[in-house]
Length: 335
Image (cartoon, rainbow, N blue to C red; front, side, top):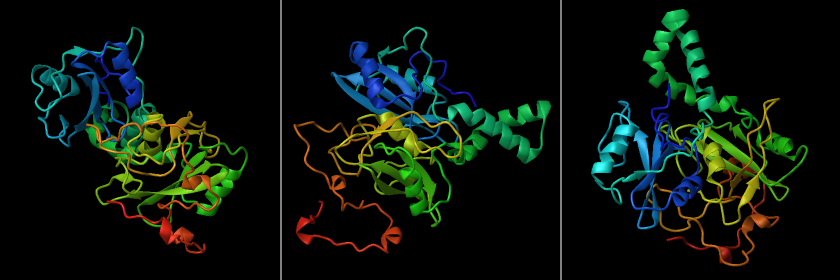
């Protein structure tokens, strides 16, 4: 299924929030200056990034079940182009009307997302195997069933990612990560024994940490209390594009995450940045992401920098054989 916004000159594809803001800066920061990019956590969705009073605003655009597109609380439109045209005439809840598109530089194409490169082949293969069709019948079925099938195959796409290792134990994940070089940020994703749960295992300071990724009843994936995603492959994919800014903040010290431990002989993904443990960094911006942390001198020693640290998001079942101690004078109640 082709990207509904691919033909728009102000659509940049799968780029990070920070990159979108850089494009807007270079284009002059005029009120109403805007661009469109792919949403990294909502399947088939977009984000409208714009400027008003020298401030950046980011509005998620979700694709509805009936195929229309809408900003949360706003009117539905038949496509992203029609949505942008509407908001160019009426702010209708935005910071200001859309006035000037920030078009891509000449010769620059929209950046494809992780799923884009495999989507068409997966949809075609699913339709062929499910209905046993070939030729014109196959092509017609793909056209008519693409929206529904695309969402279905997207939920299975993580199985083709080089960083996904299937149902392996915590101990086996650690063995694989400790094998070979041990750079900060080496990671893999694995399925846990419990239903609807996965774990992100990553290396930092020559130590492996494990973060549970839940699959809730609504079908969303998330690290507890973190950003929710439509599919499992979006979790590391979204983190990969956040660079030094993330809605899901895992602490105050950024890491340069290296290529993941590859499953079998598949080529690894490119490097990306992340943080180590989640904490609240202040008010949310318009798109639900937290703002950049304010830098201020030398950072204090963090829990994960010690040899006795265990993540608060570790699975209790995997820690039951360990003896843990709490220093009550170090506990505090979060408001």
